[in-house]
Length: 66
Image (cartoon, rainbow, N blue to C red):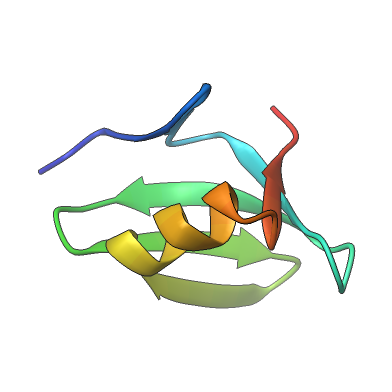
């Protein structure tokens, strides 16, 4: 199981916070697996394909808060 997602210059780990650039919602990364990244916002769970989230971070759809 992968514990981090690297998108230069950031490294995202479990506990990291990411912000959706359009919705301005902050999601907490709760699990990083080989194929998926699971996040939580309020009581909602989101599951992203790992590669897609990396692309979304690199093009600015998400930004790393912490």
